[in-house]
Image (cartoon, rainbow, N blue to C red; front, side):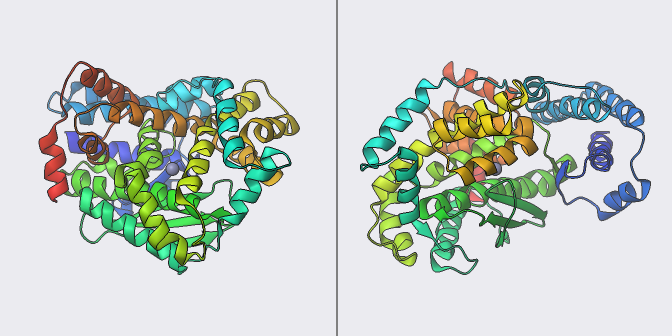
Length: 418
Ligand SMILES: [Zn+2]
């Protein structure tokens, strides 16, 4: 019965994708199912909603389904209901979208935190002229030429991959390739191809500084999206037969946890001192940037990361206050220290991604809260990679651990041992 539910869930997702191309972000189930969805064309939305309701009832009636699997499917079906309602013409605020699609609340971030970042950057980037220009000049001095075979990029992929394989349950045979692209609203994207393979695209519209490149590879590849999906393919789909994981959806609460894993991944692989030593000895020289101080570059990058909330606020201004292009870009430039070009790219992302914008900061905050206390943060991170989790489930883990519960270390260690 559970196999039927998984099959129906995947087929329903493929049918929704006919209405909203890109809804299915990755699919590696039976090719015949996708071919059938393509042959059927867009089916009536009311029919799809009836199928979704039937699936929800079937899950409620499947008493043998494992609890975590059930929670994951119920969360996905709730988001699916909202997607179908939006496709049927229902208007939903971006705040309601964040709640129903992603299981998070879209909140205004206190601008005082941005001022703290500005002060930090002001100290790190002394000199005359506006801070936004000093920051752009600092990043230009650390700029790296990005090409698929560039020595620095190859070293970053090699070392982060080695560490991810060493620490987590990355299956044998996984691989990724890197391609360059242009004219996209994002800075990089991981396309999961199935069979444990990913293609990572890096957008070279704007210059990339060397430490940003390290973060991009960690986010998209090791131990971020590629690692997350390859481990789930091996453990959930191949080993346990949980076929619902053969499809990943762009409008799903799972995205929040995936972005949390990706944004915090680098810290899960290297301590600060290990990062500094590796950058100084291996990464920076390969980029012709031996003179850079990794500690200073890291401090600049960390301060910029804390400005992520500026984009959340800009999304609320755009979608709730209906702010004009000029006003949103002015906000991004002032609080986020964006150049004109970066602000324009951020605006395109805000317009295309809508409530997805909030998944990064909120996912990162959830992962931080989970890993904040001892014991065994590495075991908790491994669990995130190995198990299907929604933000609600993650909040329950955080509640449990604040009450003294230990992680299922057996599960994580079995994974680490491969
Ligand atoms: Zn991501």
